[in-house]
Amino acid sequence: MATVIENNTLEAQPRNAGNKNEARRVRRGGKIPAVVYGAGQDSLPVAVDPRQVKRILNSETGHNTIFDLALDGGAKTKAMIVDWQYEPIKGNLLHIDLKRIAMDKKLAVMVPIELIGEPAGVKQQGGILEQMLREVEVECLPGDIPSHIDVDVSELVFGKVLRVADLPHNDKLKFLTDENQPVAHVTTVKEEVVATPEAVAAETAASTEPEVIKKGKQETGEEGAAPAAGEKAEKKEKK
Image (tube, rainbow, N blue to C red; front, side, top):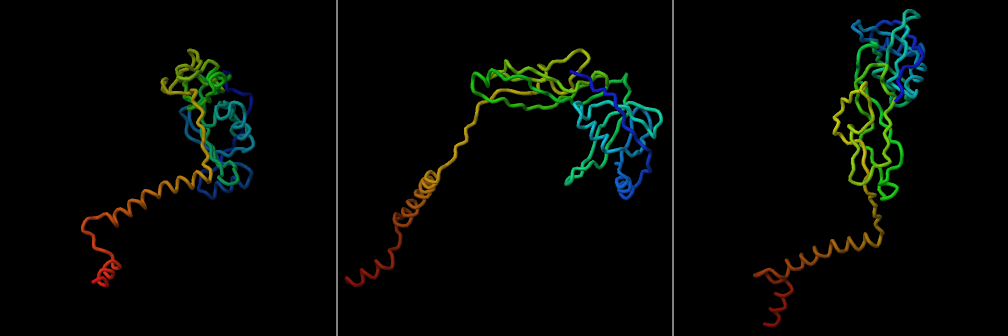
């Protein structure tokens, strides 16, 4: 579980907080609007380079990366990305939230769970591995944040459930997610039956036949039912 501190810097320039027109002006200049807050200081509107932000988000440690935030080329402070917004069609970054980080204070973050190995329930019993939980919330010092949590599932078989409490961790890491919450298990393979045209036709005929029979009984089997018009005419002719 590697820590998420990287030797990179995100440069930020102060900007005027404004409306959507101000945000568009920032984007036209090749930057994206952002807000910096935390560490007991006032929030500060800034503009940052979207290429630097994407490099951080696409790194191994992703949004849990702790980096140096340089404000207008001045003093640096440790920070991390806590929220970001993409344009839905083109996928361009629209806005990010940055949080100042105090390296001596614990914080809560979401960490990905990665399953390692092939379960015995898959290899020997013919099941499939299902992962129900892909992230777990942990509390720790910024320098102890893992980039991801690896867990070996080689011994996982039918009837056994991997839970949060089974994830590897040390005394520097505290799970905030319920420790009884399931992470993964081996389940049976569900076969999908594809109906043939003949089977569909037979099923349709079978489903409609009882209705026809029932309708015939109602028409001819009711006590005291009036005779049909043809039957009346035939009786008159006989008389």
